[in-house]
Length: 163
Image 1 (cartoon, rainbow, N blue to C red):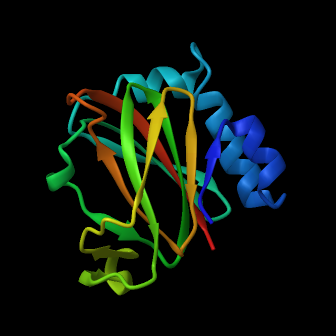
Image 2: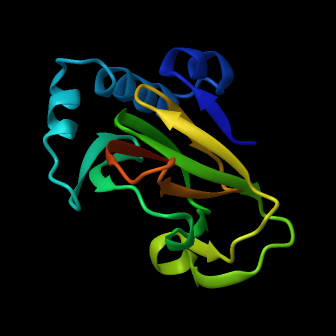
């Protein structure tokens, strides 16, 4: 089941493992103004992303983009990683649903650990603001990077924790 909160609230909700500790410690720094991580993520140019190795099968993808309209997004899920998606600056909408009764449009689990699905009216919308983190497990299908009203710039980091 997908989770939402701050790094502090997620510490009490996630199983305490070394990998989650690495991810949450990084996210706490990334969401703290003035930290090296926060400064680095806010300096990523729009449309670019870089990967940062955090250790023990955990890495982050630091990125910047302009949010897109609903019709431009795609539902996705991952088998080998849990996503912790944190908004460093900006805001976006993320649609969330379960795997049940979804139509696969592209299966790239083997090559890229991602599978894409057709849109569904059964999804819930999560409004994500700066400082908030969403956690998506392999059974959580999500459509990130959507505009919450008008398109806007988002500086974000997605931490991938190996299952």
